[in-house]
Image (cartoon, rainbow, N blue to C red):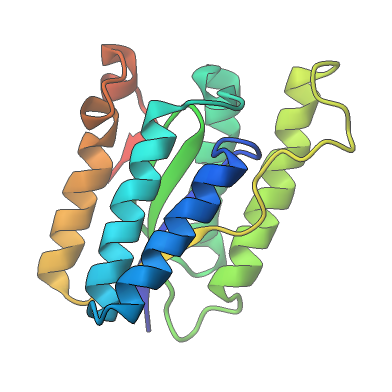
Length: 181
């Protein structure tokens, strides 16, 4: 069964025009004959760089209580059969490396939908009245990159661990407990 790197982001963290351009670049790359996995890696690198620069949108996970909510829910995925290889929570997004065993009662889609619902509800309570109940917390969907082998898993976990440093975030993000592997 699959192991994947998933990236979840807060609603409004990538300008719509930028998202459209990234998707168009990805499509052009595929049309030009770039191998699918290579095109997917390029898309992810560009997309994550936009998130790391945080040009717009909320940075809710700057607040440790919100990061705690998300970290707790990520770890709870293990109770539903997932293997959490590692994760990192950054100010406006999170990376999770998850394995879905064949025996899991949930799919990636159902698990992430539940994660979005539970963390969105809990975090909204923490930011009231700044974020009304009807406001979006998470961006719908997520980015998924399937891990091909053990060597790639090791590289992706190193990426997740070092993402805060690579993004130029302060030392507290590089050392805080919301990087797990």
